Amino acid sequence: MAEKAVFYHAGCGVCVNAERQFAESLDKSKFDVEMVHLGEAPSRVAEAEKAGVKSVPAFVISGQPYHINFGANLADLK
Amino acid sequence: MAEKAVFYHAGCGVCVNAERQFAESLDKSKFDVEMVHLGEAPSRVAEAEKAGVKSVPAFVISGQPYHINFGANLADLK
Figure 1 (cartoon, chains in turn green, purple):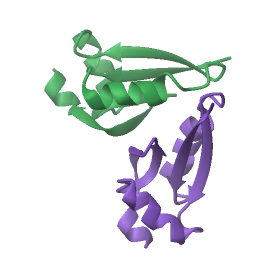
Figure 2 (tube, chains in turn orange, red; figure 1 turned 60 degrees about the vertical axis):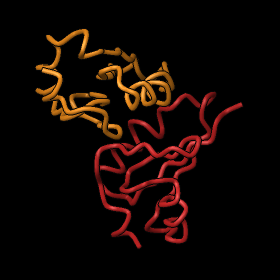
Figure 3 (cartoon, chains in turn cyan, yellow; figure 1 turned 180 degrees about the vertical axis):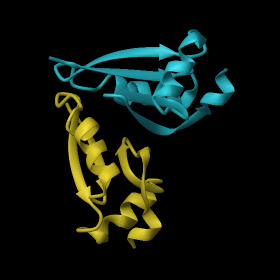
Figure 4 (cartoon, chains in turn yellow, purple; figure 1 turned 90 degrees about the horizontal axis):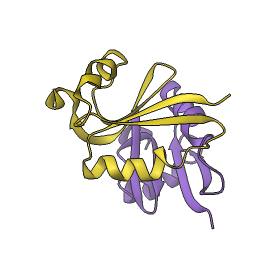
């Protein structure tokens, strides 16, 4: 069964690029990717923070955060 | 045709984890992934550096670096 992977971003250039290269390119038989734009869904910032996300773009897979480069601090999206 | 993606790592825990979650999980129809262990192939550090890689684990896709979390500084692998 595909594992859940959440991709948190904020629509920034770095985010869009990471989305294209990774979020849209993961093997769909392995991961069920959900894209979350924290600027449009600020209520989910807390959930990202709890998983250890410090900045976007980042993935959370199996409860672990994976930051890809640096777009914006999570603190600045609150 | 699959695009070339190079995954640079140094065998560290953060690297192995990123390898499992990303390098082995990219859609093989989109990316042809090459894994490079810079500890075992130090002659390739310069190539990674030239592409803008500052730390491992990192991918280089279309000449752009994508750092995933932080395992070790490239400077410490020279």
